Length: 328
Figure 1 (cartoon, one colour):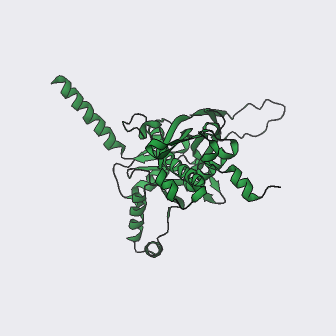
Figure 2 (cartoon, helix red, strand yellow):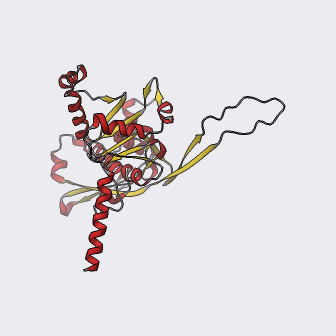
Figure 3 (cartoon, rainbow, N blue to C red):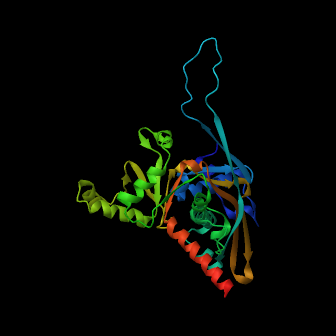
């Protein structure tokens, strides 16, 4: 019988075991994904899907309310309820993550023979961090070669006609304007649907700056809660809904939805690691290949807040500028 240590060692993403490179086996791929999720607390909580191919359909069923009727004997009881199927899909995009490691680092590294496993963990952490950033900020129309890899949740939410938008009009009054406005825009049916043990699964996602300003607004009220925030520094909620600060969310954007409505899919069979030794350049070259995608499962259960009025005015000004330049 194998010991736990032997099982873990066999599954470890040890790049040297792959020779000059190749596709990870199932154990290695699972371990790499585990490294990713262990590093990113956010990936642990969202709807994380390990895809078995590069595309995957996402089906969500919805049953209309008030379908109950009194039974009628010896008569037809016509259907009053309908089941609506909404289909969305994940389409994994291929990415490459190349890293160079110097001979000097390999010689001096205190990890010794374990350096490959250590590097694999670092690669998994970097991959997790980059993909979570893309999951929020991705925009295929952007000129930045990192940001334009794929559309992220913010871009999808802004453009999807089924999501709910709340125009903050640039307000920084999170206590009395922004947070209550966001929650008011969420359809009431989801408040009961996404409740577990009397605690709502719906979260308010915002930037750390917005979270800090909201705390300051609470502190200014001179209440017991305000005093506790000054001394304790703990995270807070609004009207029972947990506020989750996310480093990658811009200050002018807020999202209200459950974690499970944010989907992150990775094609497990696409994970490949290549390792080349380049003596003339005195370095090791590592290359990670992977395929992943992001999606919103049910756009009707998501509210996005932002200064949409200002964005519309900017677009109008840009259009006028273009017309003026063409006329000139």
